Amino acid sequence: MAAIVSEKLLEWYDANARDLPWRARPGEAAPDPYRVWLSEIMLQQTTVAAVKPYFEAFTRRWPNVEALATAPEEDVMAAWAGLGYYSRARNLVKAARAVAERGGFPDTEEGLRQLPGLGQYTAAAVAAIAFGRRAVVVDANVERVVARLFALTEPLPVVRKAIRVCTESITPAQRSGDFAQAMMDLGSAVCTARSPKCLLCPLATDCRGRAEHDPEALPVKAAKKPKPTRTGEAYWIEREGMVWLARREGKGMLGGMRALPDDGWSARTDGAGVPLLEGEWEGAGLVRHSFTHFTLELSVRRYLGAATPRQEGEWWPIERLDEAGLPTLFAKAARLALA
Ligand code: SF4
Image 1 (tube, helix red, strand yellow):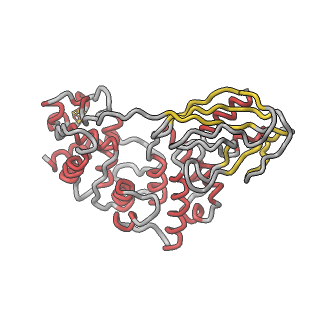
Image 2: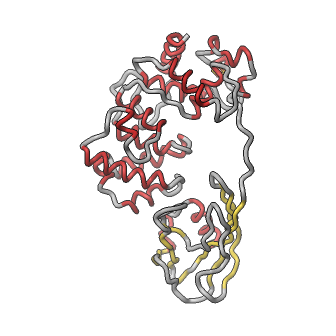
Image 3: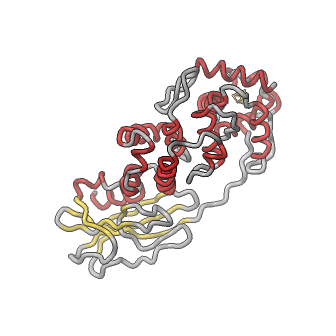
């Protein structure tokens, strides 16, 4: 079955591959490892549609890994704003510097694993796509296709081990990068989470999930834990067309980013609800924002006094606020304060 599956899938990919700015067309020379790596880091937890404009802006500004290696971290963080999971941007800079120092990307999965921010999946994807190495590439799309194809009915995350073994068994020695991308494209366009389009699927006659089960029910999800809700406050402090922006501490949530000052909320605790300046404040509304492990209800308060905060930060022109690189949460809070 293994050879048949990979042959059918590659044939389907040759005719149906998505045209993406970081990809080579099927059969073309392997794409630039820098572009493959950058796209894979951006695509973690984020959709292709959201990534495209960021990828284009990044590669215009930093066309190669050496250019990115010399960029100040705060510029990269600001350019990343809105993509979320900001530790990825910090690791991106670290990895670019490590690659520039060693004179190029490692061309094996093991070598790539040594770079900051490259886990099992990303290292395998870059090794396969950019360097033609045979590697077992399992993202959420591949996970879904394989669980269905082999009718793996154990729940996540236990089933992941079997998914890896099965993916390994169908990964070809040649064109393993195209094979990985073909699996991703099949999962995104045909073997979709809801209502898979089995009638259009090149693997329909090999698929045990389709023959023996309701494929939509696979992979079986673990019961979701309810997300806690945290509360916090963000402060809008304005003076002569400028707003006070704090610089968040390097480690921790949204670390290193410019942000509105806040009351110290975190994933584990509510904020203290104590404004950083004494004086009069008015409420500007509430932002609800969902992080991976909790939901935040952030009250936005506007300062009516004239004092300057004593913390690391800067006065920023309000008319250029969109250039400050605020994370989405604080961009929402700022819009509310300005409404
Ligand atoms: S036949 Fe259906 S369930 Fe099976 S891999 Fe194809 S789209 Fe997915």
